[in-house]
Length: 402
Image 1: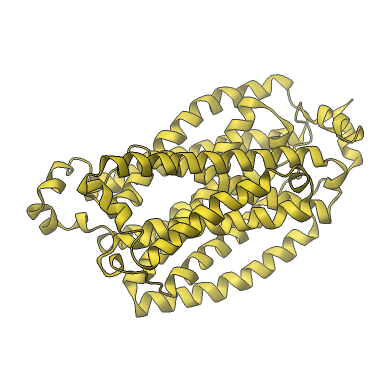
Image 2 (image 1 turned 180 degrees about the vertical axis):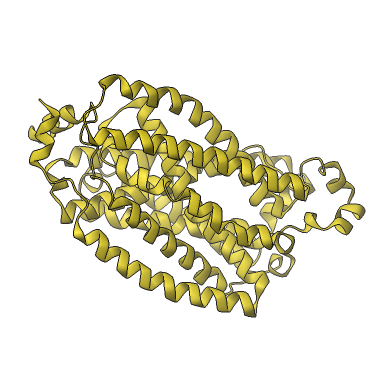
């Protein structure tokens, strides 16, 4: 089957994307105003909420980058049908680099190791000073963003060429870049999670912490792009291309990443708890005392047990009306998980659960701004790369109703 058969199906981004963008713009304006108010009324709480929201949306963007490279390496129609949402998500990375500035400006309010007097009187921190120092923290942040943005720019530039006839061997370039890019991503996000989240408690460390972020970001991105695909199927002719079989594949991957996140999280807890070392176990004790224990229990039930049980259902994974709400719920729970990771690091929240309204409005502001950017990029290209070599096989499978 010729790739020109795709021209019989309208795969342009629908007008609904512009309307969605307008609605999210209104949300972004309102949430941003409230976030600014929180910054003037309680700068400390604002920064904590901002960090939660930033790691939340960064996780969707970076998870999309990881999934995009994985699809180029492995092939598979599951990635082809969400490739353009994945690419649109990765194109927000330059903007996310700019949105990192408030964290950089307020780092001394978040990371107490950034104070010279603290380092002077803390023997443990002095041993970690080769890594935990302000110049190194800034330089590493620049390196992380250079890697992520560089990978995104190249992959998106090459993908744009697939909207016109190209050499079929062009796909080999993707595999070469993706094979190196996946390694760079895993190493960079591992170090970034240490710098930006784990160092909130500089006395604590975990060798598996970065992998928890890798699994969580992949789950966030997959859930987001699956939700977007289902919404686009309702308003475009993508429903003629994307069949229940592709949604089923995406649902199976969501199940796999849910299990992977749970495995890494449980492994970290089991090793630390069985070791029973004061400098390690304290991190968990701060997160199971008082109301924080209820949040931890909710994460076990709502981020693992419930999605795991629901995603075992074959019918739920094959139909958008059931898969969509679950995907959106998983994205929400990823934000709750980050809230549980970030907030109990601070002295005023250790003893008991505390919730400040900045923890809600700041993440909502960042998410809504990010979604507006996402829709802006999504509408600029066809929803399926027209001259991708896999397209004929995808169309053939769709015609047979698989």
